[in-house]
Length: 337
Image 1 (tube, rainbow, N blue to C red):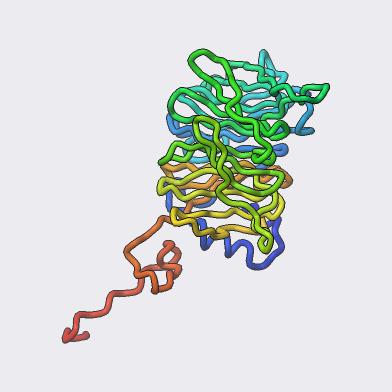
Image 2 (cartoon, rainbow, N blue to C red; image 1 turned 60 degrees about the vertical axis):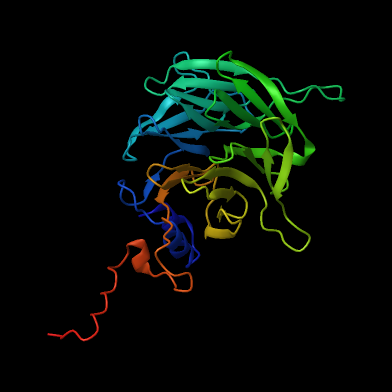
């Protein structure tokens, strides 16, 4: 039985999810992963087609070295619940949050350290400690990395929610620098690189807004809550599908939003149990969502846009593959048997 049908009591919740998120990929039906411990992020590996889920397993800010990362095979089947485990062997992993994949390395935001692990063996590859920028205060704020994303050009970007900072990491030299520190970021949580423009997109935990950051560090507000509207509360994740539609998860309201290229917002799922740092498997057109309070994660198929239907004509279940399409009308003048 799917996780959402067991956890959510609202009678319309599962219908809302299935009508908007429909499995149309080779993976088949919806896949649910359980036995996680405060899962934070869920990503796919475009190289070997596997999937990874990070579990904080304890307090989000505790250096307790008991976090772990789960690995799934290309079909979404569980390979190893604790593929990478803090305190096991030479692995240090406290509270793994956001993740990004670059070739055969899984990069993980872990408190004040960006860690890298081999995606085949799970062996540590990198441990880069990142220091928050100095302020006018007597004490330097502790780094609190929440997410990491790759720009495809040799750089990773990490968000520091507490310091309102985004760092740039040069993978060639394994060094970091501050891209921008700005109160306007309002607690940057999730990060993604826009697949078309190359700009960095950051979603805000504190004020529920969406910002765009240029490679030079210029911050531009894209969307925010207005005086008469309060669309978002605490945004956690952001990513894009192959058609450049943007998806964001609101942890507090339990919603997943989609913003189309023409800047129209639509709730595609709601009544969800604490949706976390989501991501999109663009090759298979899947959305990957962890649920922190439910200790579980799900992958679902996304609706494929279709321009073959007039805009004024309503979509039916047949457009999503649930029922056979209606028969085409017989040509005028044909003889019925």
